[in-house]
Length: 215
Image 1 (tube, rainbow, N blue to C red):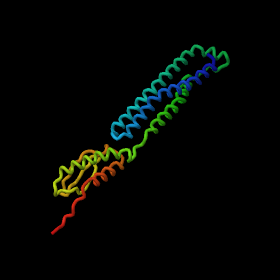
Image 2: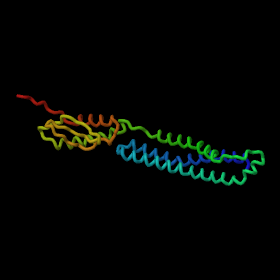
Image 3: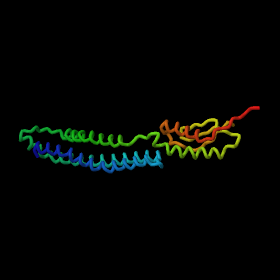
Image 4: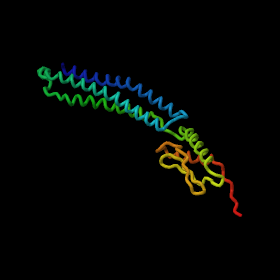
């Protein structure tokens, strides 16, 4: 095998890998579209969405990187078979010392940025959540929590304050100093706007207290 043949082989490797990655990227793109539709649905589950994202990325990496490594091994075997021909190449005026490891390393280095770029593009295409995305879910959870509070409190007890703890649970404090847990209304570690939205909806849903007159 001449140096020209080796050079042609190296040039052929990059297009083959690019074509392979492009074909394998389609299932991952479809998974992202499915997750995007789930975000827009009223039954959106933030925790499940996060788990699906992690699973999709893990599957993508497993499918994309493993075949590349297999192709690298095949390239290494090709160069191993060249060991017995190096003397013949030297007789044709080519340098006798060929750094095979350097050639393979350059091939992998050329492919790695392409894979990194595709992964970054896929992750960047995942839509960010906004207040409008989570408002329907928050409204449903807060309404249910307020109804539970209305059933529990007596005529002499009114809500003095509302807060949400770090676990996303809505807590109401009545004017008698007691605290009542109204259940989770936002996901754990949700965005700050989700907490503000839930508290605002909870306060609006409560009946305004009557004015007590002191005699």
